[in-house]
Length: 289
Ligand SMILES: Nc1nc2c(ncn2[C@@H]2O[C@H](COP(=O)(O)OP(=O)(O)OP(=O)(O)O)[C@@H](O)[C@H]2O)c(=O)[nH]1
Ligand SMILES: [Mg+2]
Ligand SMILES: [Zn+2]
Image (cartoon, rainbow, N blue to C red; front, side, top):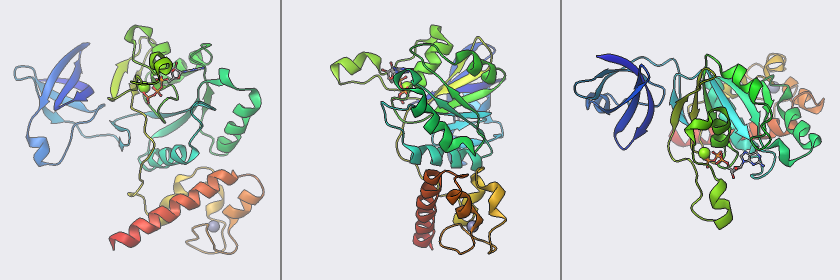
């Protein structure tokens, strides 16, 4: 019996990192019965004789989209253009990480493609959240020393739309790994080298990083509508100052959150997307009762 960490799962097999070696294991059927599916990031006990995972250790946390366990930090990656940022998806990723007690960092990649103003506009949206924001360019190798410093001793998962540069960032951090990126295929416009599997990598500069496939939709149905605003750090200072107890910061009069939006302290876009997510959650609850 040995302890390890799952770095990758493909077709019923799991790569488990054990003292620097990767051992490909099956998961014992018992997990399926208990409805536990092993995830990348899981700490596990394996039987080296049977090449099987025999125990999944309790998780510190988990995310379902992207599916990873035991992470210290979620790095939400966006690009100012190519692709156009999907702030709705970004906000949902943030809410989901907050709901699972995972720290958040925003990585603005491809800063070589735009001017300072475009970057500042994006930073302004998230300024009041106080999430750390790092600007990066894989092309010009900007921002990586700072990123390495943050990752050291942590497990960070990168998430975000397809094409924002998650795999490219990891390739700059550890060139020896040579992950596939979208580059080659852009010329021929087919068979994009997009990431298909979540994969955990060890960085020689310290820490571990998880590459995940890009996606464009996710649901937050585990969140109750009345709890949603508590997952917005930029709203927290105002939530308790609303006129009504249980204010959801929608149509209620005397809402201090809405005042903060009007005063320009909370981003208007963040607030509008909050309402959109709130309505979705309410709709979901209406349908299941
Ligand atoms: N100009 C510029 N292009 C970049 C930068 N980083 C990545 N790219 C390009 O953006 C494209 C997509 O990069 P990927 O790293 O494959 O993106 P990804 O987020 O891993 O995408 P998925 O795996 O589909 O989720 C590739 O053509 C990269 O060369 C950057 O900093 N500047
Ligand atoms: Mg990728
Ligand atoms: Zn309110």
